[in-house]
Length: 304
Image (cartoon, rainbow, N blue to C red; front, top):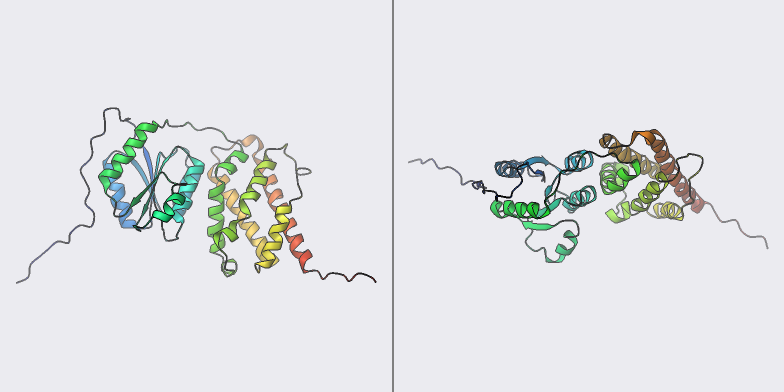
């Protein structure tokens, strides 16, 4: 005789937890990040049932939300591996840069987190192991929100320099995604550190120049760091064309961030700022390529 049986649900949605009497009445915004679509749907339903306003996303979508959202997120809940080993830390770091007050929770399916815990907690407030128990998660978020009493910040105008300083890690992460998607560049096997090691200093120099009196005729500074980058790329097997392509991708990543933040940007100097950005990135590229080319020239023998 055949019997009908229903499969046991993988995740059960707990009943709503009654909020404390001092709980704010506004809906706190949560950014929920995972590459598991089914888990995203379940977690979103649970969080919304407990009064949260939830935006669910994958890694790339999350970075865009963090960069362009006018109304900040109070909470980030992100998987650690999606599918890249450190994708969750990239998102957590981006949130830390954009909104340091946000509560940041990372989830991991790996029980042995002892060695990595210290590194992860530099970017996140809490580490939770999968499968997630929802009631402790909700209680944790409510406790932290109540203790921080996050005010909702109003839209404020920012200079281009401030926007780039605030979103520097997001720019680097988006640049890295573009580079890894380029067959010729991806063919050169490098670690993330080897690939991106020059960018924090380049962004620092760019922000510094943007904060000086704006001019295309002055402000350029000879950079030993840019020259060392050109020499390093030659040792790593780059062609000049690939160095140029990386620089082009950097400008695209920077301008994409500015596009996402137009509502925040100070328009009084925006056009000049854009020209200065292009000029500075090209100037850094010029110095790197000059050093690259000089290293290829044969040394002239000295006269006896």
